[in-house]
Picture (cartoon, one colour):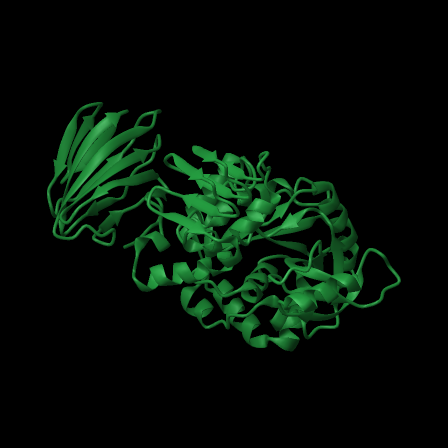
Length: 469
């Protein structure tokens, strides 16, 4: 039997876990449920003899270097990393996956931001699904419900002669509490996990029958795709013409080939702060405490401190999440409304909706320590062998002070090495670059001054990482 090829979908923004999860670094790239990130945990649970050890990753172009770095940390080589220029939901992503592989390939599609506590049960479900996919079925994994959950869509399973799988009668939207209880009692309804297994040719045939417009647009995007270092860039113009649709609506609700395999493996999509509280290890007062937290007479709380001391006195059933630039205090009964907060931040053009104070780049990271009307101070970390782009700014000058390591600085063609406690000045309009030629991390303080300090005031002339303006 042919080995399964895993397809990891990593395009989500995870706004319901703000302020920790943000557009520039969403929840799949954070260590929330273990000491590894959720993306890495997804990869690590694929260590099965029936699975090919080279996954295909489909992700946003903005997250490509985080994907590459987190693969490198696990010493995993991807078969390919496909970059979506814009998010278009799951139907186009799965179509791209099917078009990118041999028609006879068996594809296992997994979101990158799920928790599965029982890996053995997960592998057993894959073994059940594999021959079904080989036989031309489109398998979805239905989570055995543990409570009358109103936050998930459901799958109704038809009667079956097998205890391991069933045909699908219908997909249903998120129910109200009374309906959810009825589904739980019926014992033939499952939570819709968004995980699938199918033969590439099966999905393409169903798309041709039911959503030829999606298939045509994705085929065009693949044909015109370009190779960029280790990444495959879908053609932006062609992909933007593709309808945005879920695979449920596009195919599964229309096909007669959809079946469900029950999965009871301690699954969670970590869709909210309350779900993190539910799966976490609690103290004697039923609190989950992360970071530098001092609580007194508090119970049933989730308190996460990222950058400073957080204290609580006499609180019950409260969620507190602290980061370097934002603090959220919430009633768990309203936690699904976090997205409304994020929408307000976006509307007000607040940077806190997009990025953390600390921003990761392919060469390292920077932390915006202080900002004023005509100045900004950053702590910059450059990894060994890494180099910032050769660039120029129209509106700001920069002072660089090396704190540790040795930096190679080029300003208007003049090269110099700067070591600890040495500094230099980059005038407005000068073409400059900064690199780390050594074997230890370079840390420096950058002081910017000028009339405009936005990240978009940059003209790039050369870049090791293929970034443009």
